[in-house]
Figure (cartoon, helix red, strand yellow):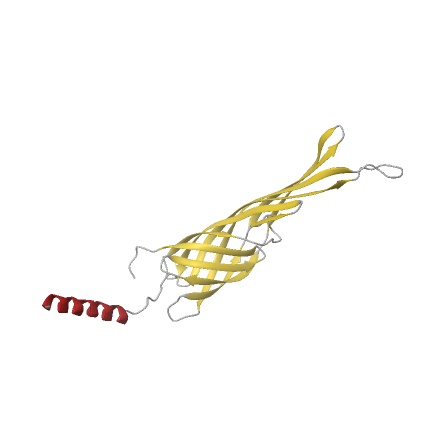
Length: 218
């Protein structure tokens, strides 16, 4: 009986200690800490022809993935400097009819499949400043500025089913962008890092970031 009483007291003591334990106050944005992350964008922007989506409809389909790996280091409290990379691929297909240039009544019509392929790659140095929104530092608003350099390539193919056989009518174009980027976002902190979302002329990004704590003692 005594053993049960001691066990009960031990459990009660542990529960009391757990109940009195204060929730952590995060110090992710202290000087010296760093983040490594991966993000993706679900919308188009004026710098990218690619985006993250899967759409399948009758006679058409669109599939794409735009990823953004990143690394940032806190050079001062709440002030980050880092770099974001970009790599994306997007393919859109739909069926239609091809009307070749012709003279006369009732010109011939041929079935065709239209294919658009996009590829993007780039990098952007950036800086952020965080403004804490809670006492435990679980949420922060931030402003962000960057200088993205992006190369994009687009290839159009119209695959026509002529009576003599299939023929591809294609064209290709490339573009290079270097422009300033300004935006804002929201960061939610947790035990292992943060989840961010930010908007700028780069587009709308979501990212998941792993905290790399500084070994330097404060």
